[in-house]
Length: 597
Image (cartoon, rainbow, N blue to C red; front, top):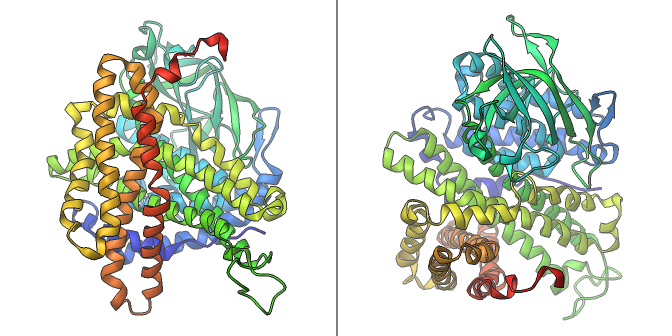
């Protein structure tokens, strides 16, 4: 049976000792909600919910899956009860505006909760996760009437939300959508078209589902400049806050998928469904990107969440499974064989997993903290800098953490050997669930193109400077500290090569965009590894300063130092290989004739 325990000690270490998250209490609206005590209390309760309510129905939910009959979708046994506890506990509105019933906690707290939810039950977490995206779009772009109608219900969890983008003939290229919106005299629109791959598009968890739908008006210009966004409820809202007649939207079928079986992935048919414009005509993509950026951060946490639970199960199995003796002599003489955790290759896989999870946790939470600053700060320069950093790092953590989520899940299967390949131990589910995160909310190749095509050159490199400057400053401040040199010097070398890669792509990409495209995925990976090295160097610094006066936590801090050392010696060198791939250019990739493939 699989296991999961929320990594609360590691979470607290990052929040309070590395990032100093209590600083958020200085932001307007967070004075009472960003204290260390309150954040810890909320997260401890969230951990219990994830461990005791969501995790127990994860494996059974995968095996049972969702069922579809005559337009009706039913979620697996236990999901409805779990959702009721989740919504009644206020977890749908952790970071939502108190004016609409939310807790008003920092987005950082929500980021941490997303990790734990994804570790315990990724399929379940997608239902409230999609609602959060709908909430964000309506909160920013909706009219006052739309906000008053939909936001309290989304925050309470009584209603849920979706994102309806993809159509059978187009996914990434949204300019090709065919869904039409015909205006009515009363200010509403009739929406007609088919959307596919709609997560949580139909289910039995809530009394209403609020679809945010991309469609084109009759006078829409071609391409993405002609896309508008509409809110289309499953049931028409009543004046008393309840639901009325059924709207013209139905689920045509659900997909039979590799993973995330507990979440319904639907074909949604809109047949003159009544909807209302969100934001300005033909400006829907801007509003949808508000949802998608929030969703991309959420998907990054899916990668981390899956990696964490997979890692925990790998460690648990490796300590119990007896096979052969250690290469340097017997470690468990009272047993017929030693536990496999004594073997170097098993340790390699587990340490890589540990280094990724703990490093990415720090990086993700740093992004979450800057998201709060970008929303709440009254200092325009600070606000802009934080917003720039979030924009830069969002495609990086979405792509890298989902790639690694699948890779770590796969490594965990390898640690388990044959037992990992069968259902009994539960770890094969993690690989199946993790795989979709590399695809949806923009494939990881698209994230890499976003990084080199939009973020790298934006505002004359301003986004890049938001990361490069603090890394340079950290290196300069710590390079003379002898205890830090084993962490600072590898970071400095990798960072210098990242700067060289950046300059090369910028120079070549101006002349030939294919050069930038060919380098993009390797550059993103190189960037991610340097970002993790920066976080690990900071964590090592904290651990070195505290380990001698640790009051019972010396082993915890020593583990951080040892993991940082492993990362610098055995993980970060991949950045050098990625650098060489970037510098190789596009020729070998693009020269071959299509018929030769």
